[in-house]
Amino acid sequence: MKYEVEIVNIGKFVESMLDEGDLIIFDKCPNEILEDVCIMHTRDQIKSTIQIGDTVILGAKKYEITAIGDEAIHTLEEMGHCTFKFTGVDIVELPGQIVLKGNEKPIPLQIGDKICIG
Image (cartoon, rainbow, N blue to C red; front, side, top):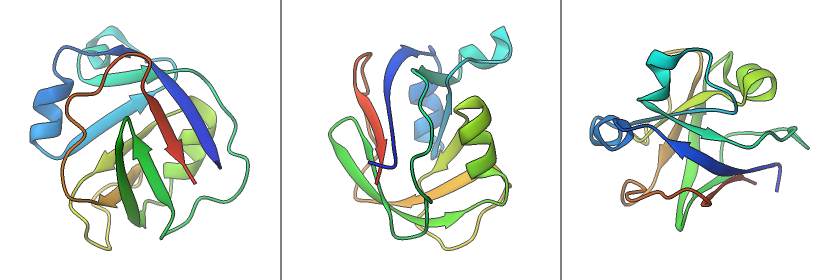
């Protein structure tokens, strides 16, 4: 795997964010307001280049990366942060997004589940 972390906290509004097609992750959330809408996870270093076509595993579900924002890899490396967007399109709306294609959203995610990119 190029990147592999374990979920340690799930904000109370994460499922609502997933209903809107977004999953925000951080290894350490920068403020309390964001804690409610994001998943926090253990820290890891990116081991090799993450690119379009790579697979993202969220819990038990797999997705294909279709687009990567200009800042997404940098923020993932520095803060364990990105926003996964479940649209499957080949463009991003924001520079910190990684767009995914897959059959269904990763509900429910649980503490202890893995987030893997490879």
